[in-house]
Length: 456
Image 1 (cartoon, helix red, strand yellow):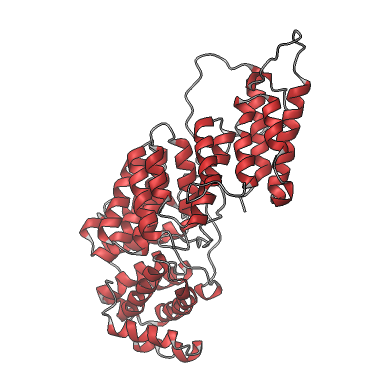
Image 2 (cartoon, helix red, strand yellow; image 1 turned 90 degrees about the horizontal axis):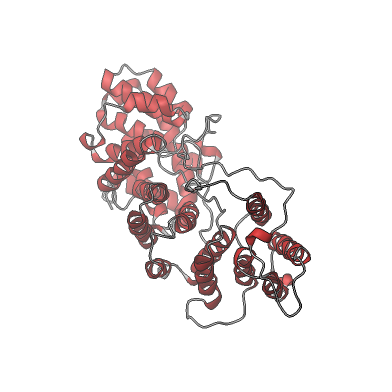
């Protein structure tokens, strides 16, 4: 790795791994320059991005030491460009904004460096406009690679809302400047979500492949899973299902199954029968392609597609075969809601001549009293989604610090992340929609609300 040869950093990690008590280790900090501690921090975070979960507690201890060193360092120490750059990198690596502001307020900086510092501080404080203005004239490619990679990630994150194409280019720059690091992990993760918003199926599949191949064990992989599932549903018309299967084949069997269950659930609720059937079958058959014990979740999500495409009788038949005892509380609530809709469908069927049957489709759904507002667009960078109180000192949190994110992104198991579907762009209807269809869609959305989190 890029920092493995740093002797002082390696020695510090050796002390941490050896389990030296925090105070004893902290006493060694003054002997190290700020840039040496930050290099060590970067090395540790890159290991975390690659799946080294054992490094998580070490990161907290190292953040404590680095924060203390930054606050107590002499002003003259930051006249060394290496230490000033280290201050900015530390800030974008999960550092304490209060410490950064305190240190910068004591420094006499040239105009260019002042803009850099102000842009980083505004980003940490959730002020995207200030960040854009301060960093507008700064080209990440002209900076030393370590600092330039973080700046590209920051500039890309604040550009997503107004300049998504430019944001994608900046994420590519971040990856180019810092391959195999936590910065690349974060840039890839954001690129997957952004490709869906740009309706770029090819880019979405390429970046997803790269993420799964290199960073699936990252503690932030749950956020990738959110973007991946939502993107598959959004881009279902422009992606190849065989390629999708190749990507999921790189996951372990349980991760693959849960991803397909989530896709099946979202696709069924959105009325994408073909995608729902594909994903349900993949989840039910498993990695070896042979059906074993029926998974009640797969049966449930497969049955959901019947709400918009099958008959009420077929729907009730599928739902009745599900073993309720094997469903989570949320899924049992969903099953109850779907069965209630199916029962209303059967009772709402108008009389037909003897010997004939009338299939029930979405237009026959009864009006629903529940009005669900459209979901908010979550394509706002996690670092600037909304101004928030200053994060506590690094010593207060054991969560890994994702780059360029003032509010720590909480790690979670990739196999069961929370569903946050992207807002989908729907074409304007050629003519007003039938009120019955509108109410039917609201009914389906209310069912979705009952599901809550991802399958467990």
